[in-house]
Image 1 (spheres, rainbow, N blue to C red):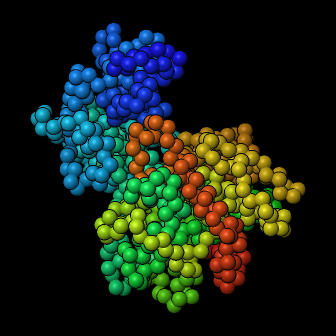
Image 2: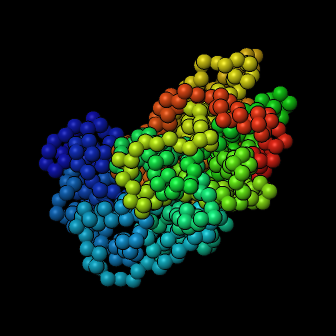
Image 3: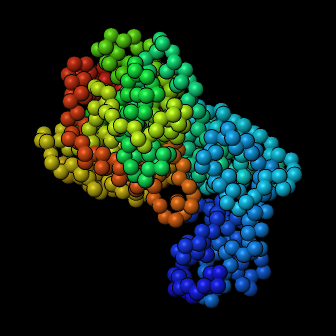
Length: 576
Ligand code: HC1
Ligand code: SF4
């Protein structure tokens, strides 16, 4: 420990602390802007400056460690002026169209400007040049709102494991984007959206599909069918002030029903997840029994698929041929459900609500159709759904809890945990273990694959078979493990990979988490995952193969998992 004084008061704090951490512990919030703990600790924005007795100039609290006898002032007149000037300089060339900005309710720059009593017109200057790019189906970049904090660059490098974004040019012309003015796709973006989540302003956002969804809702010739991803129910409540980790299944169903009107259907991607498990577990068993390519690697995360296709195509033979739950759901909706209900599939408009922005481009892939009919028509993020709920004047928190529609709203606990890292693995094990052992096993909670550790490995004994499995999440970890698999260093039967660290609960389309909460140690991945494991525990049926609608659908329509028909509808291919 060390002895310090903060604003004249004596404190004893651990010597590993930064000034920022020491201040936080004693209840003083030093503002930050570019700082993200363990990710972006450059001290570049200088918003967190403090005075330290004896230091020649102001020091940055985010990356300066405390030391014995240090005397620190965090809110002196000199500091308040310095911070205010720094932010006013940012405002001088910032595009301050706050009224229509999609981040106006949670922009960190706006909040800071207000807290520091800044004026936007103190400095007159040239505005930042707008380079507005909406050139992928998923992500939009607007440099006029960029403050060059570098958080996105760090997220792309450290989380996605690729280096799509960088500082370009020099001086006033500096801007963040891909090199050589390339588009995001050209530059190898995987659409994980981790840069969007890291952005304090609206310089990076998802490509919005709200308007086309509203158009479909108002088209009398369309039947709008919603499907809601597992992880949305673990996070949407945050947009309406509910505590992190509040499960809002019932309010999502109620909201979508009011938005979509009386003819819409509110179904569940969790049903698609159960179906994915059927196909994937049987595919795994077949690969094991018939000396197929192992390890088999999951394929439901479209950011991960983009990573493979662009950066490690050598591992394509290991990918499960299963479409993702989003796509399986769409394909079944427009075949089985449409036939059963005598609906012309071309009149169905399927909208997925996803925690992900890569889902927007996944649904546009040319393989994602059956007989020329696109499986899913549009995808909106959790954030976009929140905006629509506000747009439609719904009092979210006070809505009644309603059920999803039947039959495609029926899901097992296995389907819902898909949204957390390790969930797909656990769901698949619940089914594979029953099938391989020929019993209905009671031990269904696979603790070894739960949690946010960056690599989880386990050996699961199923009868004679010792099944070696691994779970990784986040592009960077995924690339590491792929390289170890390719070199023969790691040998597994089955690997779950999710493109985002934490899995879909921390996807690029989830509600923004303020940086100060992240920096103070809130692990949003764990908070939201808890809601999904609770959802699992609350279900009577917790194994995908016991979902009665899934069972009936195989009996009436698909035959067996991996049948010819199942392959036509539910499996896909990848590009090199
Ligand atoms: Fe996911 Fe999936 S779990 S990919 O993370 O397999 O996005 O939630 O919907 O499709 O089910 C996302 C989540 C989601 C799919 C499922
Ligand atoms: Fe990088 Fe992911 Fe952002 Fe693309 S979406 S620029 S891969 S962080």
